[in-house]
Amino acid sequence: MIDKEDSLPVTRQCEILELSRSGIYYNPAPLHAIDVELMRQIDEIHLMYPFYGSRKIRTELLVKGYNIGRDRIRRLMRRMGIEALYVKPRLSICHRGHVKYPYLLRGLEVTKANHVWATDITYIPMARGFCYLVAIMDWASRKVLAWRLSNTLDSAFCVDALEEAIAKYGCPDIFNTDQGSQFTAEVFTNTLRVNNIAISMDGKGRWMDNVFIERLWKSVKYEDIYLKAYASMSEVKNGLVSYFKFYNEKRWHNSFDKKTPNMVYFNTLSQKQAAA
Image (cartoon, rainbow, N blue to C red):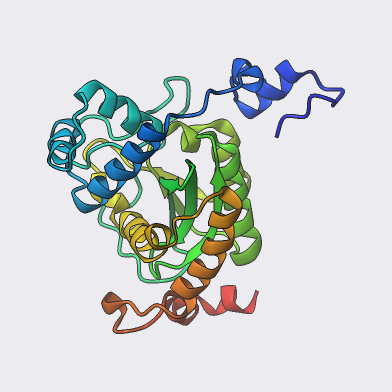
């Protein structure tokens, strides 16, 4: 995203993209192999028991033979961008300077495609390192509309996925996110506003609103990521291209009476949107 050869100063580019200038020049030290392995173990425990915090994850790791402290587990969890799912005052790391939007889905029945879209980010382990995956999902059909990978937790790859989804499928009535800084950033919310999409954000105690995407993450990891043990981001990307095609077009959902997300999406799309 940052072009050091551009006539626009790097400082101004960082301001526009809401990125830290120091991060542009910082060369991160590679993770120790044991930390990469621990993050993989933490991710598996989190998927199995998403309500576990650092204390219980530490206990699970002790049973597996990893004798490490809770502080280290918390540090790795922060790096992965995960935390226990339960009702509590704060669900995501928000940015104090970003505008927060009201929650619009309370009591709303979502039965048609492009009524509500949602998004989230998850940690993806690789054989030598890790990356992050963001996906845009249609709530009514569970169809994955677009996705992107990144090695940093910024807003840029989230905006790229959002713009691709809009270009391919039009605009939803409502877009729901949590209050993570990637989604409250001006560069992300402005993309929604200029397309006249109502912005909805989970409030305190609304942890259940991410349940559909949490289920998606579990499917992605157990049905693809953990089985393949990809070595690089390019391998992950190629693998997910195939997996999401399978997920949308071939994978039957019990909640949809054995229909695929594509079937539900296009069957519930309004005539006006289908014609467009």
